[in-house]
Amino acid sequence: MAKVLEMLFNTAQGKKFTISVDEPRADLTGAEVVSGMQGVLASNVFYADGANLVSADQARIVERNVTEL
Image (cartoon, rainbow, N blue to C red; front, top):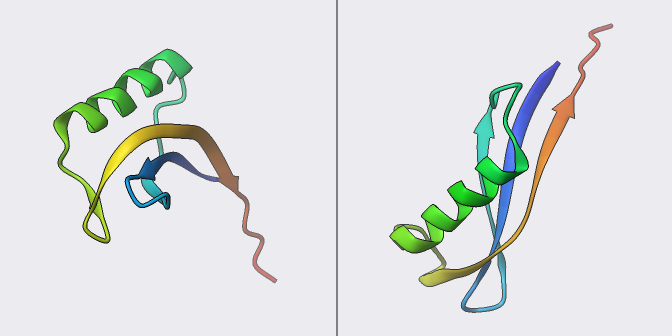
């Protein structure tokens, strides 16, 4: 089963921007993710269509299970 950490941010233009991390640690905590998202915002290194990220929206772990036939 593949797992992906998705961190969603709001941009200055009111759009959503997602950063995905494949196979996050199994013991990852919500507090660690929030801290990481705050670090991303503070570093100001990501732009979405020329707009800065202005706030963290949500984070989630997405699991995908593929069964070949």
